[in-house]
Structures are given as C-alpha cells and as structure tokens.
Image (cartoon, rainbow over all chains, first blue to last red; front, side, top):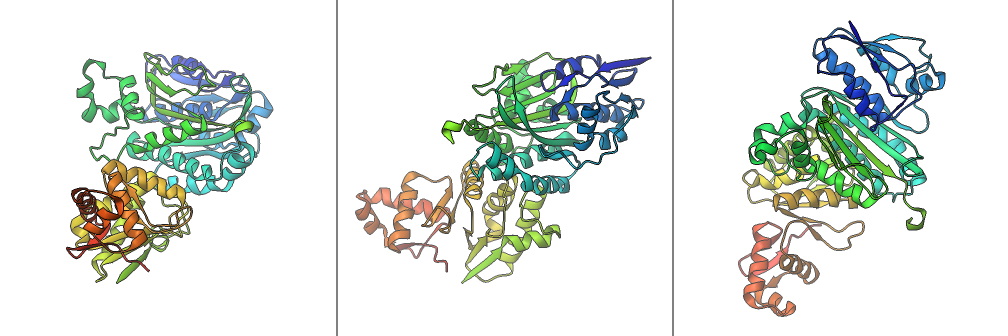
Length: 300
Length: 181
C-alpha cells in the first residue's frame, strides 16, 4: 500500500496543516508518495516541511518515500534554484523531469535550502546571509542598517536551537517575496525546520511538573517562546527566542512555531492568525517561521 | 598593567577560518577558555577584551564569552575585566545576557557612547555613581555623596555595589574607575 500525500498547490504555513493531516498516524505504516505535480508555489516553510517529512521517515526507518516533481516548469526551476532538489534527492525517490539548474539561488533567495547538522553549519549560514541581507533588509524593506546584524543574530539563534535541542539535524532557508494577500508588501521569511524531538520532549524533564495537567505541546511552546525557558537550568539559556521576539516587536514582524500537535504565534497587527492552536495533526520535530515586513514608508 | 586580548585573533585561531562572526555556544566556550588561559598566564591586573575585529556577536556567544567569564570569578582571581571595541548591537547582546544573570561589566567609550558605560544589571544609583567617577576621577565616598546630593549611606551602598561587581577599584578610602589606556 502506498499513501499519497498531495502537496498543496500553494504550500505555506497555512496549507501546512492539510499536508500534516494527510500522513495520518505518525510514522505512517504505508509507503509514502509526496505528490507535488500540482504545486504552483512553495514558501521556504513549505519546502522545508517536505524535506523534514522525508528526513523523519528515514529516521523512523520507513521505506524510502517517493516524490513526484511539479509539472509546472517555472516551479520546478525555482525549487531547483533554491536548492530543494539537491536534498530531496537524498531523502526521496524522485520521479519526473528535473531541471538542469544548480542551487545558484534567484535574487530573492537570501539563503538556499541549507542543512543544519552541527555548529559549523551555523557559522556557514551566518556568513552566507551577511552577504545579501543588507541589500534586502535595508535596501528593499527599509529597515535600519543595524537591523541586518540583528537579523543575522536571530537566524543564528534559530539554527542553534536545532543543534542544541532537536537531537537530529534540520534545515534553514531564507527568502524575500511579496505578501500580496495578507500584507501587500515585501517580506523576508526565515524558515527553520527539524525532524527532532520537538519542544515538549525537550522541555519535559525540567518543566512539565509545574504545568501539571496543562503540560503538552502548546504549554511547551508557551514556556519556550513566552517565558524564555530552556531544558537547561542555566539562566543564560533560553534567551534566543526571547531576543528574537523583542526584535520582531520593533519591526512588526511575526514568529510562529509549530511543534508536535500545537502551533504558537506572536501575531502582529497586520495579520489575523490565531495565537495558539492545539490538537493539530501531529508532525515531527519543530518548524519555526519568522516574517519581517517592509517598514511602512511613512515611518522610514 | 593592562592585558589586551583581541577576540578577533582568538576567533581566527580557534575556528581556523577567516570568520569575523562570533556565533554558537561551542565557539563561545572555546573562546572563553582561551581568554581564561591568557588571563591565568598574565600578571596584569586588568584584562581588556577588544571586540573591534568582531562583526556579529550572537546571544549565545555573549553568554558564553562574557557572562560565564564574569561568573567564573575564581578563575579570574583578583583581575578586572573591561570590554572595548563594541558596536551597538554587541552592546545590546551583552547587556541582555548580563541582565539575565544579574551581572555587570564596564565598557570603554566607542561608537554612540563617548564615555565609559556599564553593561548589564546594576542599580540606578550605582550607574549614576559610576558616571560621576568616570567624569571626575577618584573620589572619596563623602565627596561623591556631596556632589550628588545623597546621604552618605546611599553613596556607600552604590560604591560598594560597584566594587562588588569589580567595575570600580578602591584602596579603602577612594574609589576610582578602572584605569585603561
């Protein structure tokens, strides 16, 4: 038996729930086919979600999943240039015509899909991003120059969460695009995803007790993002997400974290997202998305 | 005597690459170990940590390099630590982690800050007293109290807090900021 998971035509953090639900019980018993033939667009979050699913299946020792590539040539080429197929080929049996394009990255891709396996990868990510971040953040989005360094700092902290807490490797991608429906402005989006143990298991031994019956994926996300706790008792730990949140307040940005069966978002005025969603379909690891919008021209 | 420790040089030696970004906890811990070794090998009373070659300092590294160095008072012995060459975003990162630990360190003038300043957690009185010492030089507690219009006990408490945090020196009578440069 093969379970077919249809990749949403527009695959972003909103349509992700449809994708996650399609897996049913995790890990699924059947062989998996990710059908991306109808895909018209994939956000960095969507691209990483597919890789994370492939990684989680491999780590659960399930049969190598299948992947049918998008029919739309522009979509295929874009995903190829963003580096998606380089890593998808390691995790899936790919079916369909792949464009002969290397991951050079279109101009609005600030960081190709990049694996985060160890500390050295975080150094590489920060080095790579610093080359293009200023052009996009200051030039296009109208953020002050020092925002570039804060942005790199946020990226570094988000990637380190994988190395320090996930118990396995993960992925990061950064892209700029126009948020037509929700905002009508350019945004920069950081997506970070891993197939690891998730926030609840990471924090359980040190924090579950004080939450009592409330403990779960949602409470774990609240503890990490709102209260700034970490599984380490060292008070210097757990500050990364708190710092990111502070910067995002200043930039009217948004952060959302999905882990296990819950999703928590710090919602800026321009968005209508739900702050906390629980009892969602299970998905392995943790998926972080940070959105930084172009600043209002009148306040620049 | 002042011992200047160039963090950029330590970073290049530690990660064996031309990186100027001080990021990740393991990197920060390795740099801190090198700083502690350098301080242990020196007779200087003050270690000046020079960050001028550093581009990005993330929170994890700020915590590992600066906060944990200050927490490890035993290793430092009687040595003072002062920071220099910091940019605004680095100030912020260090301030954030030190406040979390309720620690404080002195930073040399630079960038948007023309005078020495304290980074981290300290009372408003201690901050005011520090600024006055930097402006006027060594002071008796009574003189400082007079200059600020404070009762003697208030000045004593502020100065003792600064001494306790090792951002001000005293010979028992006079209090003075760390003399650098």
